[in-house]
Length: 107
Image (cartoon, rainbow, N blue to C red; front, side, top):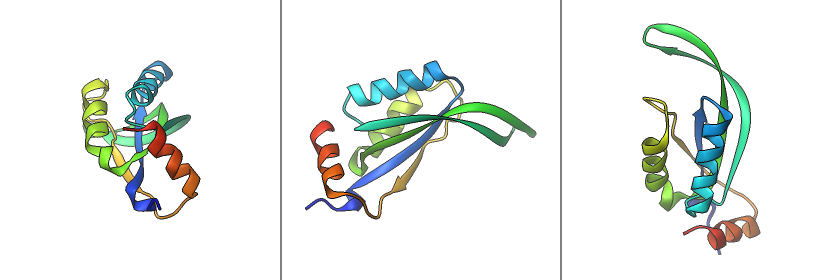
């Protein structure tokens, strides 16, 4: 039986759709992620002592928790931001068959 804590959602944002699509496709094609969802967001943040407001694309990356370090490295090496958002969110519950599917399509 799969345990929910064996899986995670990783968040990252990109400055444009093309970069987001490239990261999403690469993560799925390399079997680091089972699914990546994209959604447009507006982000407010401080960078270099200035408050910024930017349109970004948020990626919701569904993966095995054991692959988080590889995902973090992959995003860091392929992202245009100097300091990209890379946050791992643990999963506390979910559909057993969804976890089985993640196992089937991931490393």
